[in-house]
Length: 331
Image 1 (cartoon, rainbow, N blue to C red):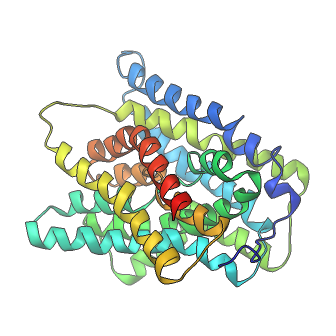
Image 2 (cartoon, helix red, strand yellow; image 1 turned 90 degrees about the horizontal axis):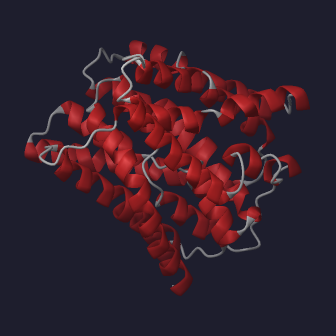
Image 3 (tube, rainbow, N blue to C red; image 1 turned 60 degrees about the horizontal axis):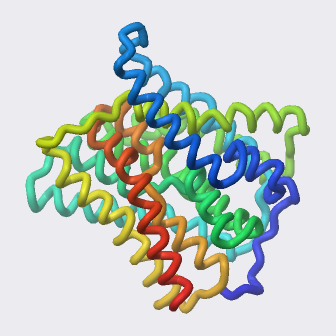
């Protein structure tokens, strides 16, 4: 992948009025402030007796049924490009499959429970490639790099969550998982329905009008504040918690081992260079995906650990991403 391999998007996808302001609500720093605010708000609302006890579950369901499909319908019909798109798209698929293999192997060696393994596969295998990823990529490589970041997120992380992520959540929650049931569950999963409709629109060159796209964007924008509020509502720390060791292992994989794998494959083995490769490596180093934690929580896969992965992983990732940025600059 050399610099002359360009990824072309319609102007609306890389225009700061739609991507930057739309997906982050404002500038890169504002999105990080919003992230901290929503997490803290959720933690504080735990102490409000009048706040519904099942609020986190309701918010989790909202995220899966409304903003995630809306984001797919907003972005995917506008994507265009050639074979070079496979590099950023493949990042999420590679990281998730390796996570499944890694933690699945550890389960067999150490006798971990299915729920623990499923939680780690989901939360360490999928990164926050949009809300954290986009502002970081814009700050590091400029707005023109957002096209590559979008590919890592939408046909990458988003589709992995809607397909393999749902398979893992079903299998490790010990739900019925025969082929017919699994296929039905995927096909009826709202984010996957939104994705398939969006892909068909892309294939047949169909596009929503500006008014509809604006509505989809507004709905999609609610995913991060609502999801982070739900995480904060469930975020609890105990000094003697048995989760600390697994939290550390999950974050080591997500923040260090996964990006090291992408760096080794894309830069060292394939000899890739240029912004697209740097963005791919940086996106692989993002904190655990918020909606992956929601999927784990909704299937009963160690909800406390899943929320700790997000709550601790986000601030820690801001430090490890600096490390990866320097590695890419020095190599």
